Image (tube, rainbow, N blue to C red; front, side, top):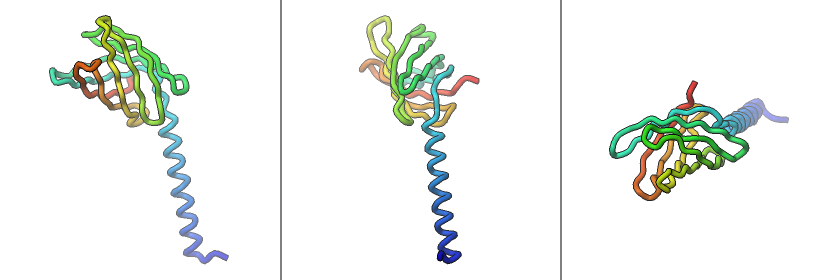
Length: 127
């Protein structure tokens, strides 16, 4: 027979474990499919780009549209709370975005300009 204090401790531990499992499942359930506004911060200033993503399993496809680069198709992957996608420019450079899913509506990460510098970005899901 469990004593009342021991019973409370067991029940509390069980509740914490269930809460952690639910939180982990909610983080893993984020689907990046949709339209996003990316704010890209470079040493030369900040720009906003439109990103349309489609996620199927761990596969990510879509388009990256900016005033400077036009519309570029991309392919990438999602693994847990991280994602990566790459777009090729008309000039032959590959832009690689590597990011973290903050929550269902926010992303953050780094952008590599094909070895020619980099930037940081934040993404907000368009409503």
